[in-house]
Length: 259
Image 1: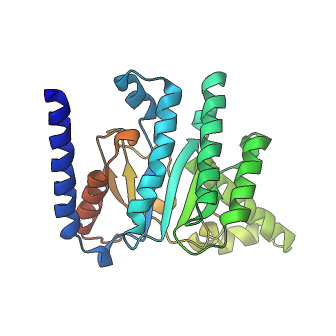
Image 2: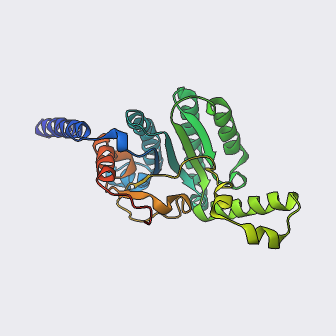
Image 3: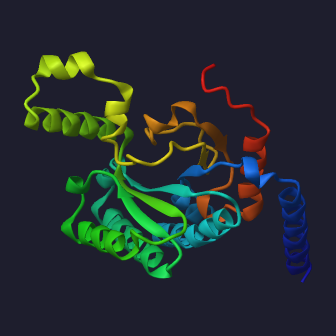
């Protein structure tokens, strides 16, 4: 009984603290594009005595909450790293389960009715079943109003830059330019126009959960001037108060853009 009362009081205290933080936030100066590295599903599951599958399922369920919090602010784009190219090297059974959970999460986003869904990643490294889910999600939810949700599936930052350069070279070759001509006129903007996120603003804020303090290749090109926020909570345990702290931390920084 005491444990139950303690947990109830703790939840109440956290909610009151979250309201206090939220009340002091200036959302007008908040981030427009947030990238999130959803890390810690397996460690959360292990700590809670659950299976790896349950950890991934809990992580997928948390996405809807996060987007709801974002909708209460002026965020316009959210990029969610759901599956990296490195994840594709996991043990076959876990990968099969993980792909199924990712596919379910993408379908839920598309069917929700509030979000626009856009895939970022290397399609060719994914199974045809997963490709089909991503295509259908974009077709169903690609032209809506509301937050653009980039689902990074089969994503790797180095692979993205490689694909961008390959796409650029192919385009210029089709236009009749030589390699020397392409090299002479190449600009940063040329590469940006061939990224998976072309046409979108770069992320203002990148959040990583689980206590790890590295990008692991996430949006390497786009995050050159991003602010980073590393949260100790595992992704399934990420709370609104953690999200608000990230926004508060962002608001307290002075972005110099290298100047």
